[in-house]
Image (cartoon, rainbow, N blue to C red; front, top):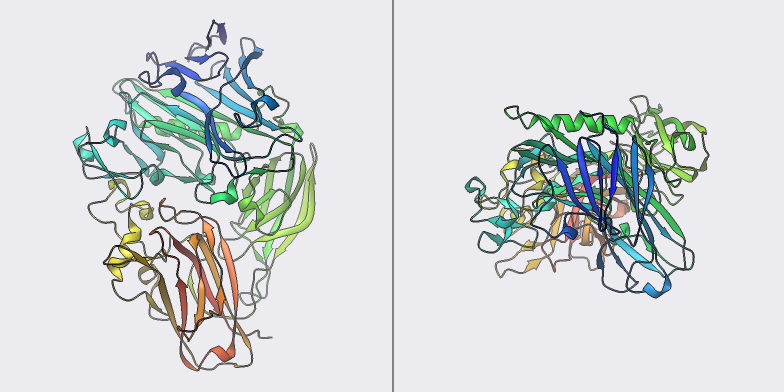
Length: 634
């Protein structure tokens, strides 16, 4: 590795930064990355593309009620923020003024790029600011996009068990593929690499949860070279640790997603009204380049990228970004404590909230963190004793939120938490009492906000991605929604408590049934259970935790499937689109349905769960967990 200092060249229409390891070229004043020279390759980016379509920040925005506008963010002014042998930081700024109303998103955007001495990569971050009384708008997505050379980068890695040789972008063109139920999904009929023939390609098969989305990218085998996107912190991402985002996909494309509505819908689209002021720093994220000698195993580059990712995580928050809007380590605070669970029908003792997700986010209602998308969120996992430490929080006011695997519902500490510079806030022992009215009579599933424990069928053998055969994420295969009608062609699912096995007998999603006339119809699932005795004057409680919903409705009836009025209806809920996008969860919902003893009988009972909405095959519900509780006992 060279120890040469960082050098900056400013040309008429470009800026070039090099440190003896790599050379980075950006258009001026646009701030579009047009070239990355590394490891003897003149440009890692797709040289067949115009310069404006290689490496860029972009966003999707709209005025209220208008259609979304895709915007590749081009700066209008260029500044050198830092220039010395240790570091170069560049700014490409786009300022908004009223003459641009309706043409550009009403934000001042300052894109920053940093190259450090001895660093095999570069950093980028941006400051978005909406000033008071500026026009209303929504921002549906913002990200950094890189399009790499298709003749070089053909092996993609998203996780240890999600990596493969990928199709070429040409393979997704007419004559080489067949488009499936939506444009993102294609069947490769005549790919340039014949080994991929007959496989499905769909970018949503490579989505990832925020908590696991730390490093992904591409490997070139000749010369052995890696291009990796590393995200050292989730603090600037919206929706909490379980929010899912796109990663890398055919192009070869690598994305750094900061905001998106994927697997959530409009709830995760920030909407600014009534002149609301807003400022947020997205990033910094790191784009890491690595290489090895010809003859060495190029797939070792993935292992090296994971090591580099851990080094970046350990270095967070970075000390080198020049913007005062990015707080350094001594300008942040710490929140710590212990979370206990009290469920008297499980144990009379306080149980440590082992493995709980604990975070601070904007003050709000219980569970509001999963829809929060304007501010910062800071999350951690509690240890086996329930102890947690949230490090490096920005100053400001927060609520503390949590959910505990194995228990339903959400926790929120009522106290407002004010984080100051250098503060360490000791919360002491906090107690979460999950929803509970009586003893468990029966339960289906595991309360973990996912439908992965339920039956996920094999895909149609003509619509397969070989990567997900015998894979723990088998739910990522294409077209699983159609398998329901094949398994239940005439009658809907019936689950019998005590005999059925939810891993084999409970389909992972309650979807509409495809009919012989190629239309769709709603479905009613049955849960049959036996009660020896019924307290007819008492109240039973049905808990229904939903892992995802897409333009769906849940109706509950008990022992009377034909009653016009259900005992409970959720109304129309959810825009997650997780069924079509191969997610196994989206936004979490929890419903508690009171069931009077007068609705139950001694002997066999049936609960009917109806999902009537059926204009699309992708509508439906993924359940997380269902429980029937008896009347309260002392």
